[in-house]
Image (cartoon, rainbow, N blue to C red):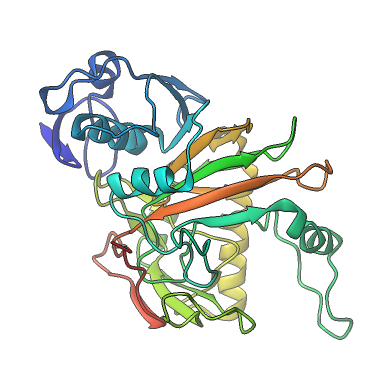
Amino acid sequence: MACRVGTLSLVEGSTGRGCPGVGWSTFDRTGTPLGVLVSEMTFRPLTPITGAEVEGVDLAAELSPAVVARLREALVRHKVLVFRNQPMSDAQQVELTNALGGATAAHPIVNGLSEAPAVLRTALSEERRALAEAEAGLSHPLKGSTPRRLRTEWHVDSTFVVNPNAITILRGVEIPPVGGDTLFANLEALYEGLSSSLRGYVDTLQAIHSRHAPTAAPRFDGKPAGPFAAVHPLVRVHPETGARSLLVSAVFLQAIRGLKPRESAALLDFLLDELAGRDEIHARVRWEQDTLVMWDNRAVAHAGPVDGLMFQEERIVHRTTVVGDVPRGPDGFVSRALMGGRSEALA
């Protein structure tokens, strides 16, 4: 049996719900999509199921269609790709993002760089106070206490819009000698780790994701900076492989539709504790100067920098994102916007 991933027909032989197997080892050895040899590119897995370090490609160069196809195939398989020694400009990062499917504005709420509106700059020095307050559990003294979920920073990018970005690309611009690590969790493995009975139940559920930043600056493109809200399937079917994953994001997921508040909170707490606590589905990326990481935002959650309060040096990363499709659930439910519009490609 053959199935399709992206533009290529692949041979049965691996795992993947809905697309019963892809002979990935053939591609790892020969790397000949579209009939063009790209065997110089090699992949060294970070863990058995999540992440790989990639060698043999200069991402700042103009990439051939064969190399782009190879990267997309590897991204679908490994979900997180790490590239070392990739010095590039913001413009080159945007070109790479466009080659992989089309760069969006930097963020639905936060403006990018004035000279590169697709690029979001994040400096740890500007975030440490908020990290420290969150760690200490500081809040309004009259506000009721809320049980702290494990790893509350675990999230999937931009799930508060109806079409979260498909791919996220993060480049190290100023990296400390040690620290600033990012964790990734395989959401397909998280789903498969549930009992068959629970999988059957969560397959039928939808969840509301939202974000509102009332003090956000006006967007460069004149579009509203929120509020945003969307209802998504709790289980997402990957548009390229048919694999199912839990679409859980501690930062943006507010409630499961149709459940009573205590029921919703109990189920979400369980799923988020599973997300944070199952070390076997995690991969940890240690940053170096000019490291570039890209991940399949449709199949992994991430958290980071997880050790941002453990060092004092600056950490600056630049992010771009590839425009995404509208998620679909196993029962055919298609995500819909409750507030705010879609995320669109700039070009």
